[in-house]
Length: 246
Image (cartoon, rainbow, N blue to C red; front, top):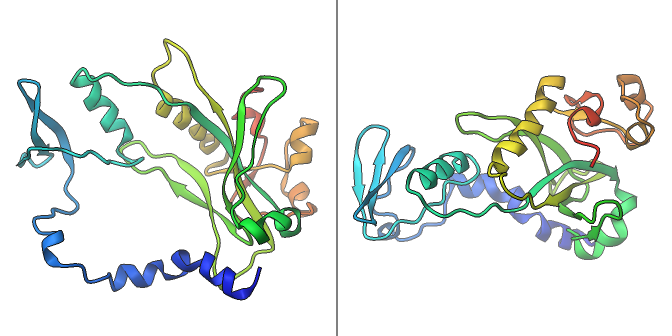
């Protein structure tokens, strides 16, 4: 990958702060009437039609049409509102997995051409769909909170235009579509993340070799590992205490 291609690929990451400080000057009428940092408590429905929303402060905003996009932090709230309003909901497949770090050379043949390779296969034992996601060449693993009223700590990854870690990281996810009576995909995912938080005080890290051998990773084992984790605050441990055998 040439320097020019690398810089283009990392444009958004490197320039995000600058754009937040100096936003593109869209016409004011595009954002007229916007209310920021206002928490919505419930959706107002009358005679089967949406009428608006009510905030936690008791203010009401009326509308003809309502678009709900609360993101991950508001997913629990949206689910509760849908139940309250007797809306039909369908469970999406649950994605559970880990973030993997390998030396850059392991994935370089793909990342030099595709940058973020999307790999997918089906497991032999359980016929589960397994895929890679959010590949970060020369990137770092970071901790992040899910936010909301009941946050848990998870991991993510990113890359910088002007810094190379020597590792490539990516999420390795297993997708499972649960059947009835399962109705809590968000709660299930949070439960698994919370187990890791309880065991480690944050997030767990384990060498693949230790995981395959059924051994807990220790600081000494991590220290002599070929791959050095970029997230130095991760606690060495045993992922089998968090993730089921499947």
